Length: 336
Image (cartoon, rainbow, N blue to C red):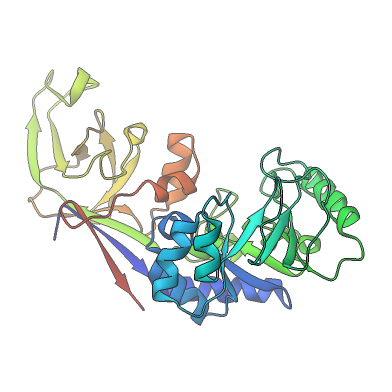
């Protein structure tokens, strides 16, 4: 094994896509695969999402769209973020989202309305040329404040009344819990990867985590009372304590604020002790153990949502921060 290994289960992703299609019914599923597929590998998850019935793929930038266009030549690709390379998008057959200024010509456009997110979007619909194919908005609180999300939908419906264009507003949270938001299409990201948009157990919404992350003990040490591990001596042993060193750190995406979270050592929950450093962290053991003992950072019943709660963040930030590369952490794709 390398220092650590991320496993992406495309079978689980297809199950999540099927679950989303089940709740969406006649609404199209548009799979959001920006940020390298939320850290899962954009090309692999994009293919699997399309195989599972997604009718479009959404990215953040023209560059992301161009990268996917090379591997999915005929697929519908929508750039959600502001686009400066209109010519490149036009030549590659990408669709653009526009929320400010003039609407470019010669490329399919989705006009974005700001109904309460307070980010990109026109305050009111502009004049729509013939190349506009969709009208959209983005919900700010579908995961936390249904009343405000409903008020956004009401403003969107009023602004788009009578339009025959494709209307889309729902993200993962809205797709799962707000039937009125589903409209013509739903742009689903986090739920596709089996991560809860609500920070709860993904199984509550019929989702299965796609990503797991494993390493192993690189070294085992015994600390005598008064001895410490890690920078700043944040953990000082009060009694004889066995620790294992895991060759993963914040340079790999195992963040510093995950100090004191739990991981699985040979299937048993064990506490991270001391401060997570750039290349390693320490875990308290029940007793002596052998180097090479397996360690699970995410998966096998230890959800990313638990780490997110510990770090005071969201799973989106955790998984997009993972650093897969051949020298430190490899990514393996399986199709179970």
